[in-house]
Length: 89
Image 1 (cartoon, rainbow, N blue to C red):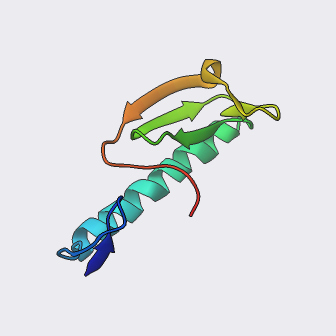
Image 2 (cartoon, rainbow, N blue to C red; image 1 turned 90 degrees about the horizontal axis):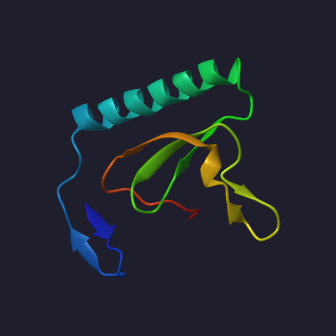
Image 3 (spheres, rainbow, N blue to C red; image 1 turned 45 degrees about the horizontal axis):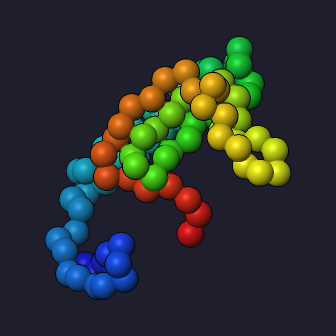
């Protein structure tokens, strides 16, 4: 498998095993289930992945206003999941 690194260079790496890909999907679905349960009593809750790998559970929006000011006070829990980046493609 060929991947593109952060600096734009391409390199060949071993593919990720089917077992680990399936485990990843299960973990993501479990996270979605937890968030759906939270929405039953806190409909504005969401999750936010910061570029440094910090995954936050928020009681409200991650940013506010036209300036996109961070709403750190809405973070109720966080965990660092390691190698992870945020943002759109």
